Length: 274
Image 1: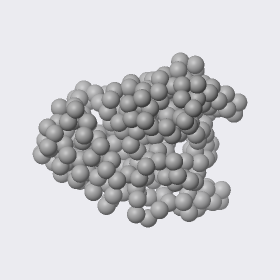
Image 2: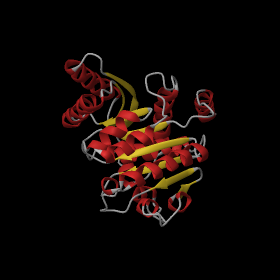
Image 3: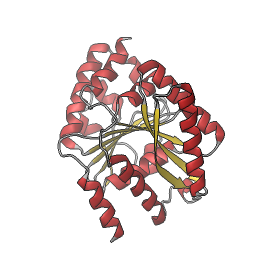
Image 4: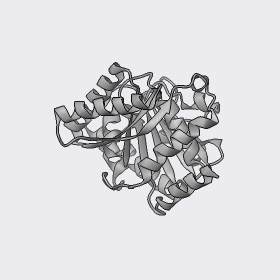
């Protein structure tokens, strides 16, 4: 019954016409970004249709975690050999995936005009067919990662209590601010041992970014406790209550601190003109 109540709370805060764009990133590899994306996507799929874009250029691995191999790849769409429907693979009920081929840096080699035309179609396709759109970013501070993070409704950092993870998240936020003047970010602390781990990690990250620029805000969404079963791709039922709390905190003041999505793909396409 508690699960139904949680889902009802989410539904009260979900608009009808606008698709939330959620990017999960943070700079450092090994903090569990793909696992967090998967957990969020699975729970959101209880509420509506979810599309995940694996944006890890060169090393996409969302499909490995999901256990379903893509039937077609993103490159085939950009090359005109497949439609958007062709390259979407169903992972589970209401959960779908777009993925590039492993080892293929497809985005940075697109023709400018083709990129603008096709990305505009992609925006229309998402809005017309899905209720949520999640982007699983790769590790590092590549310019396209920064641009995506600066443009989505919900730029979600994944950090662990490890100090190096916090330092990398700080560096990522600082870089996105310097290049795109983004000031509002969300954070999930993964692999916590106690509630205190979560509070300490968020406080250290928040103080660090404030010391760089007073206008940058980090909103803690919640934490996911360490569980060895997660590293094996097994999701214990008790983890879901933490994910539900994260989603409730994320969606409660929808778009209060972020820009409207209009022009998201146009901004991404502008990357190719530089």
